[in-house]
Amino acid sequence: MNLHSVRPDRTSGPEFRTDAAVDRSLREAIEAAGRAPSMFRLEPWRWQLNSHQLELRADQTRQLTAVDPHGRMLTLGCGIALDHALVALAASGQWASVDRFPVDEPGLVARIVPSGTYEPTATDTRLLRAMTERRTDQHPFSSTPVPAGTIDRLRRMAESWGVYVTELDPECLVDFHVFTARAGELGQSQAAHQGEVAASTRRRIPLRALCPEGHDLLLPGPGEDGGARYLVLWSPGDDPASWLAAGEVTSSILLDATVAELDVSPMSDVVETPISRTLVHSLLGNRGYAHAVLRIGMPVADQPTPPAPRRAAEDLTPVDRGRC
Ligand SMILES: Cc1cc2nc3c(=O)[nH]c(=O)nc-3n(C[C@H](O)[C@H](O)[C@H](O)COP(=O)(O)O)c2cc1C
Image (cartoon, rainbow, N blue to C red; front, side):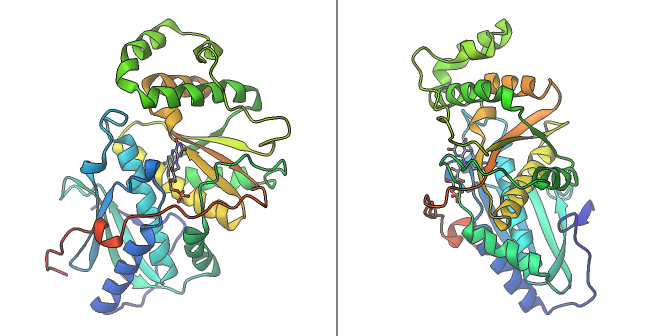
């Protein structure tokens, strides 16, 4: 079996719990993972508690087949839920191994196998709390800079999952906002644009020319969003294991940033269409495959974002097979 540690930075402890106590921790983890964010709030995952182990599957009924035909965002969404569940388990002192895409059960995204226990750290507890405190902040960020060292810390964390973080050069940001505006349009009427997308990709149009005539680019105004940094998450591979890892890294960055009192706004629309993927690829210097862009910055104090609703935990778990 391809067993990995819970999160790359954790070590095991020796104590074992009763089956009932293990199941309780696993159910709490499912509930906590229900706070995981997802594109369009699709929550495209299903959990099953089975023989004192937790199984994670993608919910194919929630796949956006036009925008996400290969299941990249579907799998990335599962990665976010997986990391949330592992953070919750860590905070409960439950050690576990994770088998990602286990070969013995095709279709399973991950199996969480509980083992010993350990003493949760203050950071474990703080990360758990971050799940309920965190919001996607779509407001412009303050001009206060992101504290020095933050981006490097997030980059190192991502690399422990084999995912890379490249920060967009401020000089590219106008082009990037053009992509975002254009990608949003394409996402809304993708079928109608498919021919145009293919043609545009072949013609190597200058980036700014992609902006539709008269389109409001939503560029931040003077002094707005001044402290925002834009991080592209990418991997050398474009396969389910890379998409899942990108989701785990997304979760990990969102929670870490929340603890550091930073806000993050994930943007997947910029990598959803073939043309926007190609363009972000060009910003990466034509290496690797981009999974998402994270806009990170200091929030403006008087602009709180209310919590977004979630599906009920029962909707995320199929009928019990009676084996747990
Ligand atoms: C992987 C991912 C991609 C997202 N992409 C976009 C996006 O392209 N545009 C957008 O407005 N919001 C995007 N979001 C934000 C979601 O809409 C938001 O997470 C969801 O509504 C839940 O809200 P919350 O994060 O405040 O809990 C994305 C979120 C995730 C996790």
